Image 1: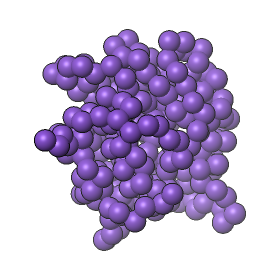
Image 2 (image 1 turned 30 degrees about the vertical axis):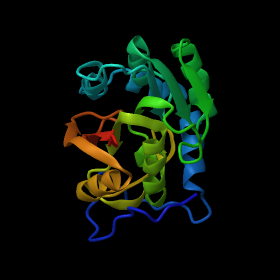
Image 3 (image 1 turned 90 degrees about the vertical axis):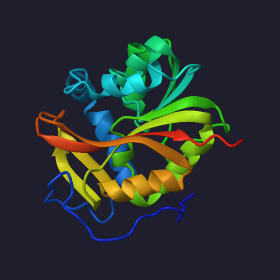
Length: 238
């Protein structure tokens, strides 16, 4: 269900991907993402395993250091499970969700100790308070931005009191970025600018611990890319 709560508005800024192509008028952006990752599975896995910049490992420390009691972690948009879910599974019981059946097939082989679900991250449901932490490494950016506030509201519900969220967001606002040949398949991205991302996270009921723009000199497609990384926690009510 779409939510109008926390949907930012304001001046548009250049997107973090300088795309010149537009999404075909009859294309479903979420199906583009699912089909794209099915098509590029092994290629994307090879590049993702390099974890250039080591950002996943650095941000996972927000869960492994100074956050006692963390046990159950949800990894949204887990892809083939490597490196993100695999890193998490060293410390926690991990559950991964991805829209691509092909990616989940690889993930079950790469991280046999984790649980995996084939689902759209905007549609999947879990019980309230089910997880101690939720991560979304480079996945929310693939969701049409009008659906992102609703997803964050669900993440807040899935977290227990004081639970932590780590997510990657656009560093520049763009309603729709589309590349017809990204690593060999069409791909879609969408998002808001950093100030609106922070507002959206806070509107969902999460308190921001850290919000930083992080530049990767060589992203999985070989290009320099900047993302906003946000770490937040669910407010405890006393």
